[in-house]
Amino acid sequence: MTLVRPWIALGVVGMAAALPADAQVPALGMDSSYGCTVCHAEHRRAFFTGVHAERGIRCHDCHGGNPTALERPAAHTGRFLGHPTKRQIATLCASCHSDPDRMRQYGLPTGQLAELHTSRHGQLLERGNPDAPTCTDCHESHLIRRTTDARSNTHPLNIPVLCARCHTDRTLMGKYGLRTNEFAEFAASAHGVALFQQENFAAPTCVGCHGSHSALPPGLTQVTDVCGHCHTLVRDAFARGPHGPVAARGAMQGCLACHGNHATVVVPSDSLAETCTRCHAAGTAQATLGVQLEERLVRAEGELHEAEAAIASLVRAGRDVVDARLRLRTARTAYLQIAQVEHSLDLDALDDLGLVVATATQAIGAAEESALEQRWEHKLLLVPVWFLALAVVVLAWFRLSEAQRPAGPEGRSR
Ligand code: HEC
Ligand code: HEC
Ligand code: HEC
Ligand code: HEC
Ligand code: HEC
Ligand code: HEC
Ligand code: HEC
Ligand code: HEC
Ligand code: HEC
Image 1 (cartoon, rainbow, N blue to C red):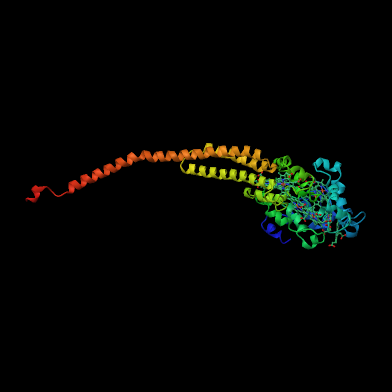
Image 2 (tube, rainbow, N blue to C red):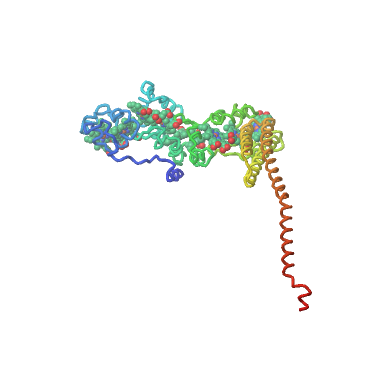
């Protein structure tokens, strides 16, 4: 858990949200005749801020017993469920949540328990192993909130920390031979930055790649589809290229080979060729193709930077840059496509897009050049003006020195 604390301290997650004071808890028809809440004030507070109380669900709907009794033995009677096991909890929650008739009106899916059974979590649960997460480990037992509620464990921003509760626990994970660095790697990755720092909810949390109730590591042949589910254009390009079928039959790690899984990295354009030599020896046709692809990427990127600098210089010269900015946008759009199409390893396609970048950026460069030339012309135009000014000054000086010259020979004779 040590890795997780800083995130909590930073306020990235709001899981430990304080309970409201008693006065703020609505009575919701539960008066002093409802025995359970008379004696269990703490649970009452937690439960009444959750989603279930909102829908009129009461203590005895889950625990049984006699809610009208005001004495403990009489209250905890009959079909009373005091301390359910993890498996019993799953069955209890599923008694409503797997029932389409009950869930239809809320538009909630009903597959949670069935999905859980397909995961390693569910299989462990089936064996009665207390290490397995059951519904309440991820959703709490009384303070259950909607996934859209930022205070809930299952709000996108809080999911990585939820999973990390167990998946950063070395003793627990050691038993199953699992690593514990997924959270730390994820938090620092392109996805973690997009999620935590930019609050971009299109970025995957742990469940974006693993599924929530069916959490499993995607198999080698599935990875391309898992990533491609969101990165559709990259996936299509990748599938068109020579690696598509290779990854589909599991003969290469697909996207993970260059980007990793949890520590998803952006590959700098000048490292593209390097990625090829991880699998293809230097000097082979494949590695050479990598060098050629890299050249295209680096050149286009360089052209973009030059165009940006040219626009900055136009701005300094006080020029109108509306057209130049539009051309830069065209170039950037083509560059984004290059970064996607590159995955097909198709040089011709890259050259076509490269041409778009080159044309647009050259036009910006030309605008800058002509602006510079015009500036020189301006300066040249000023030459006669300077010349005239100088002449006036010189003339004035002559006049002045003439006036101050001592008087003529007549004076000297005096
Ligand atoms: C007269 C007070 C009283 C009433 C009424 C009462 N309880 Fe309890 N309940 C207790 C006490 C005391 C405990 C033991 C708490 C402990 O051990 O910390 C307890 C324990 C429990 C537990 C924990 C499991 C166990 O058996 O120890 C559950 C669950 C529970 N109560 C649910 C309910 C529900 C549901 C109702 C209403 C149907 C209810 N209680 C009514 C006093 C009451
Ligand atoms: C949606 C089902 C559900 C409802 C409704 C519910 N509980 Fe529980 N409760 C549980 C589950 C599940 C556990 C077991 C939690 C565990 O072991 O992790 C539990 C545990 C308990 C316990 C014993 C463990 C503890 O946390 O101390 C008490 C006492 C309790 N509930 C009281 C109540 C009271 C009082 C209400 C009504 C205000 C209530 N519950 C409503 C599901 C429910
Ligand atoms: C390993 C943690 C985990 C376990 C165990 C778990 N859930 Fe969830 N649950 C989640 C997460 C995370 C989400 C949010 C999913 C999302 O945003 O895609 C979620 C969402 C939900 C939702 C909202 C609708 C939906 O399906 O997205 C319900 C209802 C739900 N869970 C019920 C249950 C029930 C019932 C169980 C036990 C059978 C259970 N969950 C077990 C993590 C878990
Ligand atoms: C008596 C039926 C019933 C039981 C038992 C029950 N639930 Fe629910 N649950 C509901 C209803 C009704 C809703 C409210 C749906 C709504 O308003 O959108 C709900 C909502 C939820 C949500 C919020 C879903 C969302 O909109 O994101 C979660 C999570 C959830 N329940 C988990 C659990 C867990 C965990 C248990 C077991 C401890 C459980 N439920 C037991 C009926 C039940
Ligand atoms: C209560 C503790 C707990 C929580 C919370 C939890 N897990 Fe797990 N998880 C485990 C345990 C224990 C295993 C080992 C299961 C096994 O190998 O039999 C496991 C296994 C897994 C595996 C399978 C790894 C493999 O290669 O076998 C994945 C994937 C996984 N968890 C993802 C998640 C995700 C995603 C979340 C959050 C939504 C999550 N877990 C929350 C305890 C937990
Ligand atoms: C971008 C997709 C992606 C995200 C996000 C992601 N994972 Fe994974 N995860 C994978 C892939 C792919 C594998 C399988 C790796 C392999 O086959 O080499 C994996 C493997 C695992 C495993 C089993 C192997 C191991 O590392 O021990 C666990 C456990 C796991 N992930 C947990 C998590 C948790 C917890 C989170 C959130 C903090 C998370 N994952 C986020 C893609 C992802
Ligand atoms: C749930 C959707 C989703 C899934 C699944 C997903 N990603 Fe992403 N990915 C995103 C989003 C959103 C971003 C942030 C885009 C941005 O900021 O430009 C992103 C960013 C990236 C980036 C950085 C791009 C950049 O230019 O900054 C790479 C590389 C990446 N993902 C690779 C992968 C790989 C590899 C996988 C599979 C293991 C994967 N993604 C799975 C949605 C997803
Ligand atoms: C052989 C190595 C390699 C493989 C395999 C690979 N990529 Fe890339 N990927 C790169 C390189 C290099 C870049 C950077 C291109 C650039 O800088 O313009 C990149 C860029 C990206 C980007 C950012 C582009 C954008 O849209 O901004 C995403 C997203 C991405 N890859 C996802 C994937 C996915 C998904 C897969 C699997 C289908 C995958 N990559 C497979 C090398 C690879
Ligand atoms: C993770 C390993 C891996 C990486 C990284 C990788 N490749 Fe491949 N590549 C393969 C495998 C495996 C094949 C299939 C070889 C076969 O079937 O003989 C393949 C096939 C090819 C082919 C088809 C020609 C053939 O021999 O069938 C080309 C072209 C190619 N790769 C180019 C590249 C380029 C360019 C890069 C860098 C951008 C790259 N590869 C990165 C593993 C990789």
